Length: 194
Image (cartoon, rainbow, N blue to C red; front, side, top):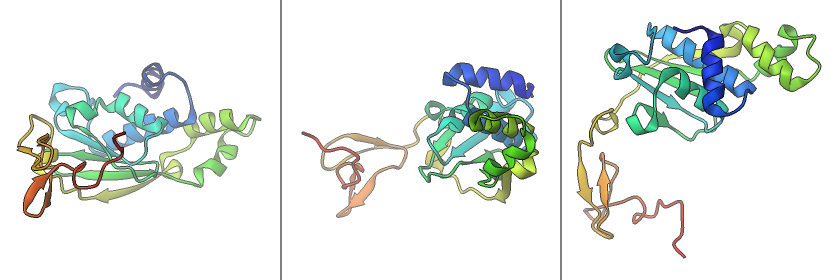
């Protein structure tokens, strides 16, 4: 794996600025790949074997994407909107998976690792770089049941919504009155047509 400094630089370039979330995300991705024994997640050997579930839409997620090469469009990055600074790294070849959570007490521990930094923002960035993994993260070995429709690759299923006619892919339809419907027609829309 590339060094932390190189990975952070690449992530900052993609994300647009350096922040504590970038530091945490790069370190989280490096740890996740290390636990799965994946040295280069962007290599042909591993690119199709890694899926990452992120649980927050914040800066760390961009860093995880940058380091792992996992992307929504490739169906290898999955977003679960839990509002938790955590990610689960899954080797789909052997089913091994680890959920890594950024610890809440790491915010207070930055003072220990960057005592000379007066600015809290800079203290976090420096402290998170120096803090050992065991203080920055909690790690859980987990099992992730991945549906065949959530696997990377071409769509495995296409079905027409019985109400609006929209094609729904990858088993994401909802059955209403024994008929397939898109989530929008079934009432799960995030918007209202005006």
